[in-house]
Amino acid sequence: MPASLTTTFTHRILQGAAASLIVLALAGCSTTKDRMTTGSVPKLTKPVEEMDATELRSATDRLGQAYEKNPRDPVTGVNYANLLRMNGRDAQALAVMQQVAISNPADRNVLAAYGKAQAAAGQFQQALDTIGRAQTPDRPDWKLISAEGAILDQMGRASDARQRYRDALDIQPNEPSILSNLGMSYVLTGDLRTAETYLRSAAGQPTADSRVRQNLALVVGLQGRFPEAEQIARRELSPQQADANVAYLRGMLSQQNSWQKLAAKDKTPGAADASNTN
Image (cartoon, rainbow, N blue to C red; front, top):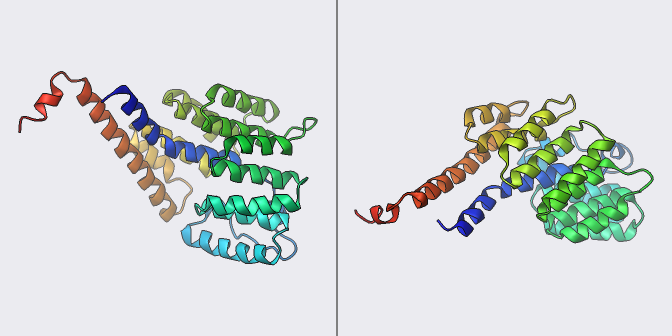
């Protein structure tokens, strides 16, 4: 297989990791969860990342109805956009946040969520600019700095991304989400051993959540240690969520194994001729 094709195939294998990275890094940009307990804004019964598909659709419908009634409300708009993205409706999430940002141009949470929606829609430079406007130099937010790192990783600027993660760690030492993002940055460049080191450190922190452990499971699985990866993936999740994660890991490994076989075949002298002997 030509080098350019193997590189492309490897990149496709790691696209799932990239998606995981951007979701984890940007999930904490806004701090609206504690503001959802008052007023007429529908309450979420559990964290978004723990919802199954049915719960996500139901919550999205409820928040959508609230958004229609008051599209200028920042809390409703931000949470509705987050749910839309979790449902894969990135373009609609971006449109929602554009409207909310027009009505709340100085709201830091809104700007952060707007940048998040831009990044999810592939507008990386615009996302960096928006998140930059949300940042305050005198009291920098480590979540926004880590989010900048995630976006830079998506742009292929790994060195700049890792520096931003380290800047965030200077403010919030041993923060598991930052350590996880740093580990996933190494996944995107194919350095799985270094990635695992950071992810194990992240997973070992007292405040680590299931998303951090799922990233660890992904990296362990990509190194061919699937039983260990499956064990990690099943911790603290419902059977349905665990089965979905394990199926995802199996799909990733299946693609990786296919690439490895093709690469090995390409390196074997006479392999092409042998394949045509039957």
